[in-house]
Image (tube, rainbow, N blue to C red; front, side, top):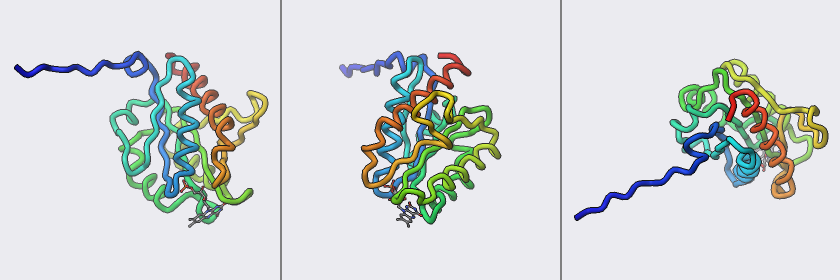
Amino acid sequence: MPTTSFRTFTEKEVNNQKIAVVFDSKTGGTQRAGEFIAEGLNSVDGVEARTFNIEKIDTEFANEAKGVILGTPTYMASLTADMKVWLDKHAVTEVGFVGKLCGVFATEGYIHGGADLAMSTIIDHMLVFGGMVYSAGGSKGSPTIHLGPVALSPNVDDYKELCEVYGKRFAEQAVAIFGK
Ligand SMILES: Cc1cc2nc3c(=O)[nH]c(=O)nc-3n(C[C@H](O)[C@H](O)[C@H](O)COP(=O)(O)O)c2cc1C
């Protein structure tokens, strides 16, 4: 006789605010930074964060999410072409931004390589889509994170703490707005 097995949902999956970290990444650096941010997000009580490459998003989770953080490698002092195409064609249906808390991050190969410009362009899209952009800026003391955290490749691990702090601040703001 076949047995039926039921998956047990964790308390985080049942009750918590979902936050989606969505990124483009060709050589893994931006993905790693996104995973560090997710660790910071998940350290906050009441939040469940998951990471997705733009090529493979759990759209049910992402649409349900109250927060969305987008990350891009810096290409030619801007976002990648693939990220731009995803924003133009798929972001609204796959994630949705209206009323969501929105954040950005980027990696770059060179200091002053243009990551701020890349993030600023993504923020433009978030505002056009109806999102609420947040970084905490300098309001939480050191480290000041202006538009979003930036990690320099190939040493992305050196920015683990920065990314985690950013994630924690973002999650605390999400809980402050939306509750646990
Ligand atoms: C086509 C291309 C263009 C790039 N342009 C820049 C740039 O303008 N400024 C910069 O600092 N780094 C630039 N880089 C380096 C990438 O931003 C950096 O390696 C990034 O961390 C890669 O992210 P990934 O590992 O997630 O793919 C470029 C890399 C490529 C392949």
